[in-house]
Image (cartoon, helix red, strand yellow):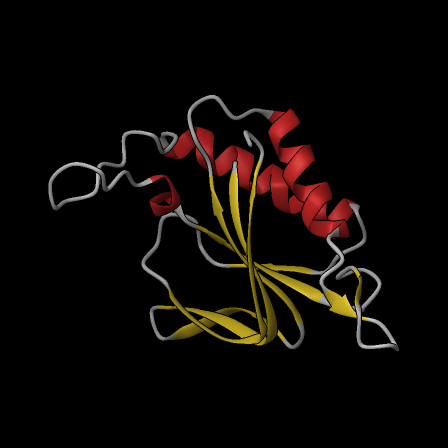
Length: 147
């Protein structure tokens, strides 16, 4: 699994002109799934994201996790994270998992975040979405279960 983690002051996702997920402060996540991902990958990336120390403490040092900071999660499924742009001009998405597998693991990922004590909002899997957020810091990281 591949997760783009962005520390956010606020974030929302809109589908068909309606806000379907919104957070005030926390992390905006883009979540990609590949063919050989399984529940071990889900556990690894969800636990890593939950405990990444990227929020400032009282000394303005990045020592707190989203849990410590009382933040929330906006999780967006994003198959394009597995786009291969090395050849030609059109990305190849063959490394992205098929929708049924990806949706199952994406939902398990969100459930694991919730089990870790986080409030999780989501987009709508497989839909065209508009994502609006304010990147705080800016802080943007990549978490990959295979690296």
